[in-house]
Image 1 (cartoon, helix red, strand yellow):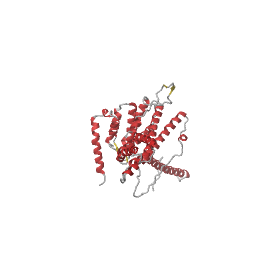
Image 2 (tube, helix red, strand yellow):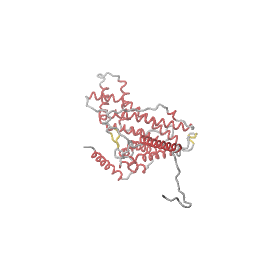
Image 3 (cartoon, one colour):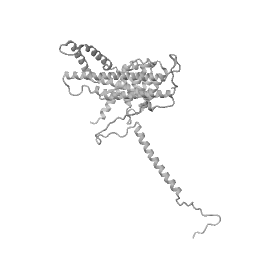
Image 4 (cartoon, rainbow, N blue to C red):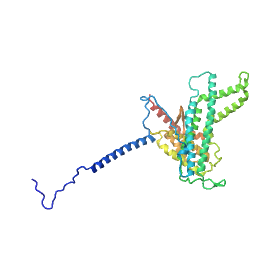
Length: 400
């Protein structure tokens, strides 16, 4: 037997626990809380993946040949969503929210209605010449709708810039009254410029689609010759000649507005200084340039990466915003131009729609002859070689 401890030495015993109800409750609550944290973590991860800009699951056409597309619509009005204690803030948010919704609607209308009609005009089997001219006569109706659409886009662009100019007004008096609504020194609205860039991109896409469709360029002059021959052969055609001059004016107006490749250029060359001064607003000039830089910084790192979504289309809008800024203020920002120009190293060509592609460098040089003076010769010469190399790499990567 082991002898008992001698002297002051005592046996040390652990505290006895009989698994009381208190410990059982604590352990049960701890397990429930652990399961809640794990479930909540998974839910947050799913929300992050759904709302993030990363590419998630793609559509498998072999396993799921049928796809259902639907477009949800919000039934709540903008006025019902915007409610703050500041009445001026309510008005400002309401105005810009309505303009953003209008831009989004116009972009959707352009992509769904007008771009497919322009791209597919003249496609298919070649019919007789008489039938082809009938197609062109029917196409004039679409051009009239497109003319109204372009006019609306121009009005929205002017409205956005005038609203921004009224918001970013320097302190002072204009026309005998104070024009500054609030202190906007730390207020930045990149979402406004993002929607404005998308709308301007649609105008650029319309120009490129008309330029790429050879059928429109060939059939439009022939259609005008037919209208001229109608006046010389009144006996053979039973129409009211009194309406013919008005129709000819419509054709001339449509050609100048839509078919001459100046839809975007006419938009940025509008007169913006009507109700509010836009071109002489230094605060808006600085804010406009800052937003262009911020938008470019947001998309440029993801260009060419696996998680790129619509960065290239956003880049087209940024180039359009840069041209609009230069048209308004005539500021030679070499650093900003160089940053926009150097994107060709990643994306020399941007796919717009159908068989239409777009190059930023050619676009910038065509719009303003002053831009080459702001760039060195090496930057100008390297663009074409980079574009050829890019196309060769893409061609070699295609499956044989």
